[in-house]
Length: 286
Image (cartoon, rainbow, N blue to C red; front, side, top):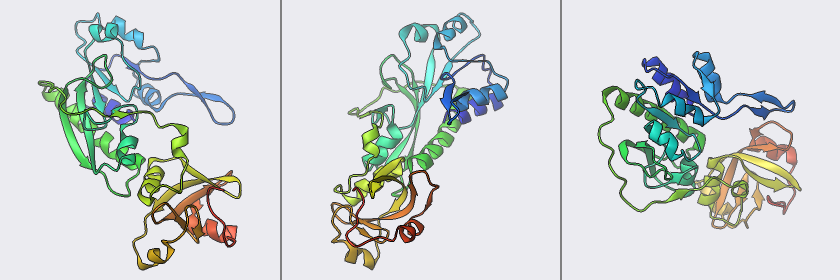
């Protein structure tokens, strides 16, 4: 997610003496160590990379160094580092709403119709710094977290490069009641069919949603909330009950569009339904 700002800063001619990213992590069945996308992009650009943020302390002694840029770092930066080097952060919400680790996902789960991106000053507190600039964007009723984040990264990258070019200006204090975007817990990806249809659909839009069918996990990649006349006839389905690709919820139905069985590839929900040969009374979540 932080790769586009890194590449854009490099392309705009800003000097980048050091990139800090997470340590290499084991990926895949072989457990090979794989660099983060940020580290991979930095190495491709010929930039030095470290996974030790304290390495910034040495850079802070360089009087030619002006600013640190933070994007989706995911950790509180300690005062000793901020004393050595002023920093700005791209945060993907309209602060003070959704401070914290998962602002895009929380905006979707809450049913927010708008969110945005803020260029803000980094303080020791959790996303408490003043805001230099912000841009608001609509959240589409079917927009996924992946798609929304892509939009916010593109907008935020332009916001960052433009304001570094002309100067940051004054950071306005945040105004309003803060809300906090806690990291999405594993259980929040589990679909509870007794919830309203809109909430079930939001969980799917966040990503990694799953349910069970015939005792095995079924991943749900894409759903819609049908609005045709046939949805009225399916509206009396009990939570989890199936009518072809339509599933009952707490207040109506959602339609499965794309699913994935354990150990299998993603497939259209209708193809899954045809292959499963649904029996009367079968339901999801069992």
